[in-house]
Length: 151
Image (cartoon, rainbow, N blue to C red; front, side):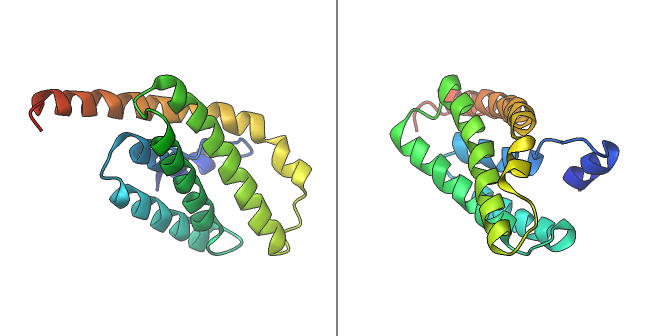
């Protein structure tokens, strides 16, 4: 409900994709991330069904982002703020490119330049939201692991 509310609150402006950033940050921080991945994809499917032109494009794009995050977690330290910053930028780019590619394949009239036009604003807003969520989740995870140091 929050994402459509923000779109209605700021008409004509690009708003951050809070659900995508929340899904990405939860997947990045927590080791038991299957629940967050599934919930993010279900919400993307529901958002497509209610507000989108094409059904399933958001879910497939979210799945692509999740694969990127899991690959990044495998290669790099997921507790690093620099890695989180890079991932937040890549999440927005990968999500937007997959979404545009699938929409274009489904005969969307939007050109690639139209998709790129809002990309810098999307990257800035989504990165700020991602880093705030990531910071808060990391603090909570650190406190939880500090209490259970014997695990």
